[in-house]
Length: 187
View (tube, one colour):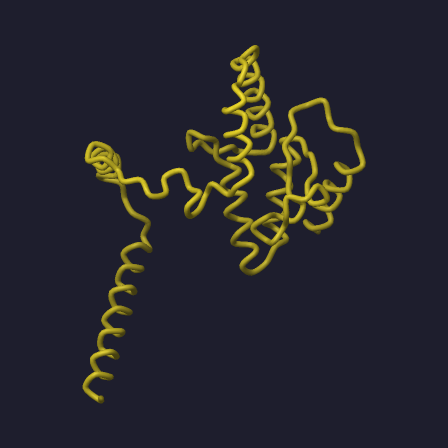
């Protein structure tokens, strides 16, 4: 199966049609993680189902480091905010439509202040997932919050590789100290 051809066909169909009368999502043709930009020429409007399938196809036809990034993106897309997994593209599309309708009803008639609109606009213009722009950057957790996190994590089994990773890190540190010590003795 030629996943790239199917992906290109979905993108081409979306670019050559009017905006659908159903719930839609913007999609980066070349994902940002792979060097894509937010330019209009790199964005296309897809239905929720098409968007889900597009990310699946990107994962399937990518290779190397790009495939890891696309696998992560597809995995993130398969989860809703409560951490439950969508089974397929139809379930994803029906949930997104129901959520959009619920939010529309919830916020209908509400007026946003100019200050709030500006804050939302500025937030959308920046990468809020990393570094200084992350919402928790520079914040320290209270003892109460730390206790809650500790309670939540108590009894949670760690991934099997985490113990191996720690052992590798300890070995690398020991090796580094040994080399440093050897250099001092040689000098």
